[in-house]
Length: 62
Image 1 (tube, rainbow, N blue to C red):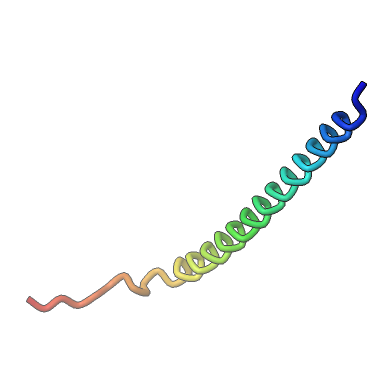
Image 2 (cartoon, rainbow, N blue to C red):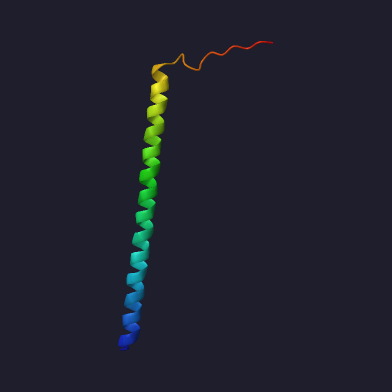
């Protein structure tokens, strides 16, 4: 049994796990930012739905 090869294999597996965790952390951060933006957008649209006449009419001269 080659101890050095086993050690390298285990180190590579650990590195892969750390990289995977870091990528998932970044994906979670992106999802949180997207969720916060969506909530902010929904708040703005709800504000406009309370005043449905705002922006609904405009004057046209021909």
